[in-house]
Length: 164
Image 1: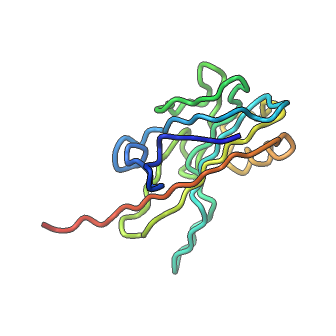
Image 2 (image 1 turned 180 degrees about the vertical axis):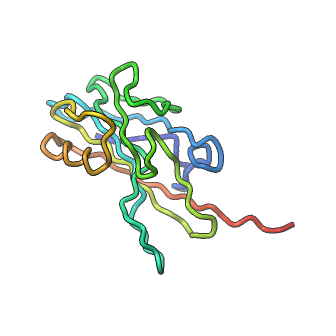
Image 3 (image 1 turned 120 degrees about the vertical axis):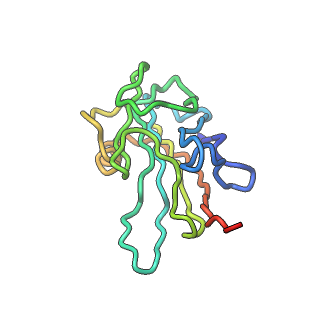
């Protein structure tokens, strides 16, 4: 199983449409044929651990949780609204910002290049989780249902604007 997106440019950096610098809308995703017995998918986007001197940041820092994606789908469109339950039964959880839905990369200007990972989980069944789960709750529910994981990573950097 492979995961694809239009969120990353050819150099591996995020297209700014999917960051706080422009639209901050969720990107499109596509994936190839999953393993047999797949009944559901979950997608998680995290900021990869990054250590800064004097920082108490807790990682992974989650930017998006999507789950109970039906097994017959091979595509999530761009611009998914921040709704707990979408019309097709797909659900979203609470990211590390405390918000429902997608929040794109938005590192502090001048903090350097930050790394992000997308993971698509092929699962034996839809997840039985109530409410808006956190990353920790979702990962705990995924563990016994996991068949396969597809991953890829990208980068983003916000530069400090120079005075004219």
